[in-house]
Length: 238
Length: 238
DNA sequence: AAAAACAACTTGTATATACAAGAAGGTGTT
DNA sequence: AACACCTTCTTGTATATACAAGTTGTTTTT
Image 1 (tube, each protein chain N blue to C red):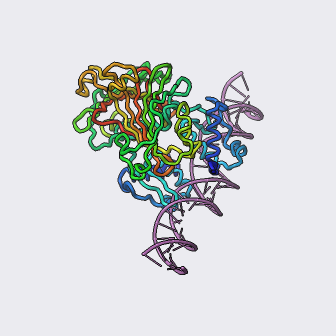
Image 2: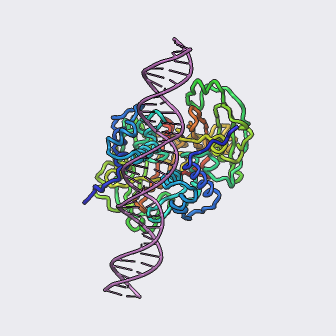
Image 3: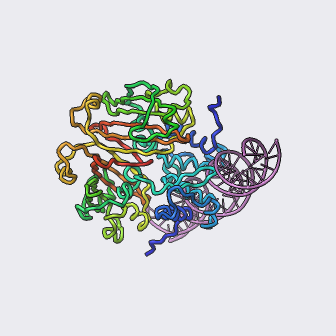
């Protein structure tokens, strides 16, 4: 088994810097080493470093200023819900607890939240689970996730609790989220949601249906998220 | 007056291709000319072309496949609401009518939808307007926009009706949207919204508060959008 | 006829180089 | 002290070049 395929240098530089920012080695407001310094550090040339920095900039980890340098912005807040990552990175891991309501299980599926499925997806079935996310003792997210049941060794054992699903896929399976589409709407809580969120009848709830696309051809993640925004508004950058 | 500053070549290539895709000269599913062809067409080198293509790819206009080419995806649907553009490009211009509820006017402001303002912003005051957006005879969006009152020649005369505000800024004033932040929540319609949307009391409404950042230093656009999602769910790609 | 090998495309990665333009700090002159 | 200038740092733009790797169609071989 070779989980270790050799990454292109610009991705290695990206992963390294990303990790250092996440680990707070570079803090918000800091300047990254200059592009030339990064060249010597990673033993690559400037276009390569710039490619890594471009991606970090796009994802909101840094901002660049001509003549000044690359300013660290910290972990992008809430890129999660509204543009890329999952709920975990959206609100920060600090005060977020996760209850698994329905454990990951193999299911048949015909469609996914009104998204039509390919034949290849229907054949393999899906990994299905439901989670309730709780912030400061208060339930905020309720989400249903469906993933095609392709061969992901040890997947169900992994970190659905507190780590980001997308990080798991990226680091362990070299599957990157490349984009996706989502529908978002306001609804009122049905009895089930009333129970989960502990809210009265008629309470407004945010609903997100998402089809998430990855670098693995034909591999999509489907998720439906309900969110009680009365105390925590969904926050996102773009 | 020189509205015409010379753009870097990679931006010129980007703008040209973007326009051609928007004008349907390249249709969905088409292949763009190869990178080498684009080089000779625009008389630049490959890294320059690739930079333009990278941006088009990030914004969803094209997808690239190694060995194949650059596949045109058409105008990115709904990049609008949830990641970059304004409501116009989010839903397509076809069936969208705009009613100006409050005409653009100069106002003082102390804050913008709970976003704090800089001193420099407070001093110049803001351009304020409210719009109701109607799709197929049905009111869907109600939005309030506030823009710092810096010198934008002929701005209030321009195209608040049907064109995208962001396109106007980009083409006429070389101001690009570089990002922003937003809060999104579900609420129930207050009496004013009940009237605008023609919905009963307790009807769920989507609310977006946005602070939009531009390439012009210190120039932010603030907008608050209410959306009746009972018939048209907000759709976005990312 | 079917399969394998090849050639001719495409995009992906990476280097080396050069100059432009903005920011910051020091050094002089006034 | 204040200002202008210069040097030196930074990132931005652009070229020229090379090879790797994926796709497609053609040619050759079996």
